Length: 169
Image (cartoon, rainbow, N blue to C red; front, side, top):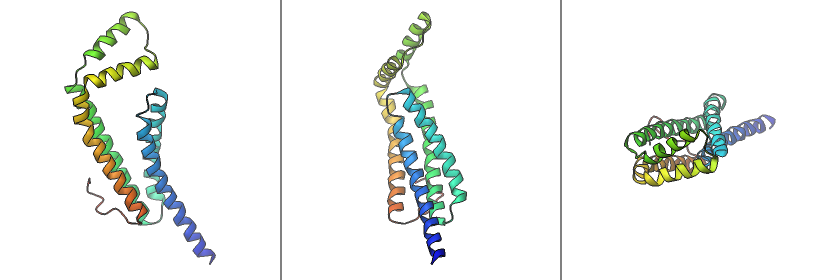
């Protein structure tokens, strides 16, 4: 009886770890949309913690079910990161940078650093100026992320393991 109780507790601990990894990743992504540099920095730190947490937990958890979910989440994180970085590079290549050029010249000539509010306004103007490239480049990334996370959470709630972990979708 005591041995069964230990197995159940170990199973619950592993399952809580997997749910925590999904939760940390979702929170870290959402934090980067809040218009505060401090909160966005915390989101980036939480993102890195989530990556390391998934990598460590993948070797610590006992059941294949939990290992598969962590591998699925790690693949989601890596593909999301790769396409986000590629999207930033594409935006740099194809975007319009007149707003950034004009404002950076103003601040360099005056010799001071913009405040957090001024940075937000600069990025807002830049986003409006590049709304189509932003939409075209980052919408598929957002759809991919929503699909993978909703599928992973759905499978987790249904007590099913993700199939074909080598697949990107």
